[in-house]
Image (cartoon, rainbow, N blue to C red; front, side, top):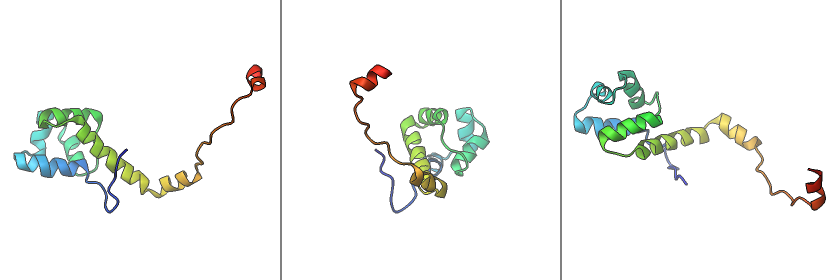
Length: 114
């Protein structure tokens, strides 16, 4: 089960990428894009929070930066869940959904009719 921060939004993976990897390694977004074989726009979108981390991007980042794909995907999942949980549309939809209840066992007569 994911434990999302309750007092703030989770840190987006693009911020982690910028401040924990690109800057300390002295890499530009262009350098990273070239190393990963993706477009500059793809990396820029992630770094600036306009694009999320796909499974493929997670694999590429993990390979190049020596991390795991799970690191990137889990960060993205946390951001996505936080956004969804705080969306008015999602909150309204969730209020309309009634949880499934346990059904009564099917009797022998009902089974025969099936």
